[in-house]
Length: 326
Ligand code: PEP
Ligand code: MG
Image (tube, rainbow, N blue to C red):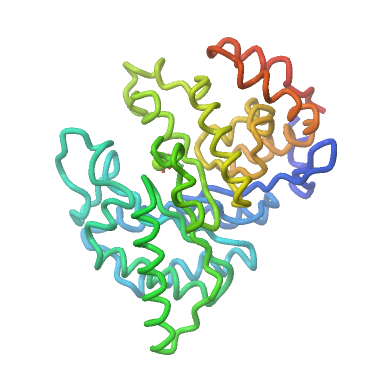
């Protein structure tokens, strides 16, 4: 069985009826980069840069960050590297004291893009470092915890300004740095039409989206039963998001943990996803499930999936569309 999976390292992530699904990797440190090539992934879909900020008692300076990002870009050898800007706050506190040390509701507090906007000098330093790395290969910037148009617009403006400054001082900066928003706040999913013209791609962070949608702390075992990715509300929200994005021709990826659950591949494909970013350890299993999937059949079963009224009905749908292992 393991040998069988290993054989898939060099195979395309293609459905039975011939559609290629883009599989990217989630990375938390430079140790994950080599896996992209070992597993035949399309690039880095989520690089959690905050780990650089969790290491010491000082924030990393521009040069330190630049060298790190550049090495990631070079390690991709032409495949895209997606840098998620600092996602501190909530459960992730840094020793340098950037994230607030106490909030009554940290998950609803100053985290992700909100924290970056509240610390413009720190944010600009990170953007400068990422943009400088874009001179070495394809780079995408992904913003965590976006709630609407204002934030994306503000970042677009900042990026334009910094790009100009960097060029004026002789740095090679790519013209084509893609900007994306994470969809983790339900408001952003519902009102995506408000900022879809400002983004090049979207990436759904279901780990947080489920927490906020169902009002259930992702880390609290007492409400683990309420933290349910197979709730009809999540499917409705994803379906609506995918329809809006596809009308605007903006690609959508899922980078939360559900993307790495091979059992959910038929469900994600039926909803309309064609791009997933996942942990290296589950890539081959997910590829196998994709290769056993019939996209035409799954698309036809989408209305039935969206009519499911509870978790059990969704699980029944999955059970009838599970594809036999080969
Ligand atoms: C998510 O929320 O789904 C996500 C990918 O980000 P993180 O798990 O780092 O919050
Ligand atoms: Mg998140």
